[in-house]
Image (cartoon, rainbow, N blue to C red; front, top):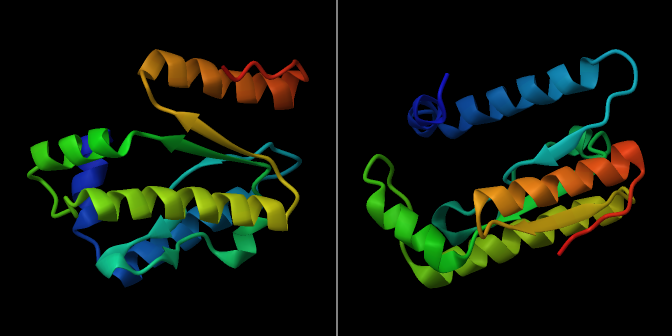
Length: 149
């Protein structure tokens, strides 16, 4: 399934259905046999109606080994949202800034609670973000030094 198809299906779900799918994903990851490094790049909050709501189930928080937030510049998010008519999204720069900040704060709070690392990767370009993400993986899997520009 392509990202466009997933996005269109996801936005058509109500909150109860989204919560069910999140729980299923968590159950699957928690059921994996043996040790598996879990690197999470996900949304940490839902800011519907400008209210911060954590979307990561508490039972899953300790299972994530590395938290990654891929950060896109707020004006770029606004531009993308203004050009995307397939979804109803907030197109206010102040709300987008609040959402970006809430994502980073929630990831940092959860990582600190479980003594796990958190990385904020700025998405200036797909090539750079991919390289920085690979650096995170190298550091934690191969034990090499992290070269975060």
